[in-house]
Image 1 (cartoon, rainbow over the protein chains, first blue to last red):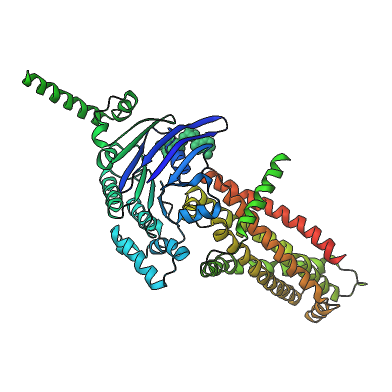
Image 2: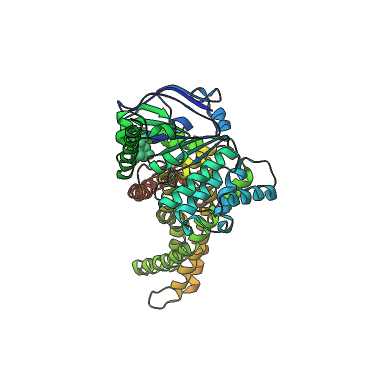
Length: 262
Length: 248
Ligand SMILES: Nc1ncnc2c1ncn2[C@@H]1O[C@H](COP(=O)(O)OP(=O)(O)OP(=O)(O)O)[C@@H](O)[C@H]1O
Ligand SMILES: [Mg+2]
């Protein structure tokens, strides 16, 4: 479980994160949602320690990241996996070498065992055939899957994903979402995902945090999100036509029901 | 001025981060071999071609300029050798290599920065500066002197080739005599020592510019140009300082 308390972060006098507190639970996909520019990426970068907050606590099962020194942070990072927005595969290495990289750097296992583990991870994301290809030779969806395989190679306790669906078609997006969710449940990871994709929200929103202009406006799960009466959240969700229609239909049904009961 | 000092500080900090004991020696040596092959070995052909041509041209130019009967013909071979050994094969060659290798390093690391590959390393707990930069620095410091030695040999071969052409007033025999005339072995060492330092300049400055790219592809291009300009200036500066220290 990751707990953040009163995170504040500003750039050159402009406050981007305004006193955010939240909990991200184990074995669940925790979503951070919000408009473009609301501070999602900055928040996730603060949580993983690529940026330091101006004030606040970031507790990884009780261990405060903000008070760690360099080597403590490095130790903690071996428990983290991260899926970047653009996959961030190393383009001078093949897919298999990419997945083996964290193992090569940190695992004490023999080459054979490391290779076996990497092949297992590739198989888990359905990418067994692509091991010998270079990132430039595979599609965006495959790159995402390869990046997931690399992120889980060291059996992380914490998995972070920055917009895992950007640049993917809806069907591939669903596959990636399901994969992340399955892996999270399977390995009991604490997974934190940045997204503004409503499909993901409805599909894997176990725990959702809605941010607007650097302020946490709302927290709940996918069942509560549609029926919430938070104005800002409704504006965000029902910005898409589809969801506005869904809501209208639901309300009509509700009215019809009420009518009947009367 | 303030900005320059800021950059210098950033550069020193980055080098501190890069020049440390590698996390994994096996990975370091793997990277080192890759870098030597990619940056060094791949530059061999251009070094050889340029050196042969410039060696030939230097010999011809000198023979055309020394037409006085009072100056012995072996002076041509002697002067050609001195130019190649002292200045061309080390300083001029490294300026050329700064263009080829420096832009290569800066754009490679810069691309890794803007596509978040460096962040991906950091988040794994890998010291990205150490992993990416140290093998390049060590690789170039090992292999650029080798390139310089190749350049010396092929440059002089170019000069010898020129001495076979009629019309320039050279003879192969006098040229060869000139090549051996008053040979000072220290000049070769002087060039090699210079080239080791140039190698450090090229690798570290190009890495610095690449590592600190912010933005996108456009900034990567700019970083690689800046890297070449800055490392060329630093090479020339180092040339003056080292010559002053070692030859006077
Ligand atoms: N390094 C930085 N320096 C200064 N300002 C920054 C920096 N990083 C982000 N910001 C600012 O912080 C705000 C939030 O940016 P952020 O990238 O977190 O948005 P986001 O919610 O991730 O948006 P998107 O959905 O488009 O990715 C933006 O206004 C941005 O300009
Ligand atoms: Mg973002």
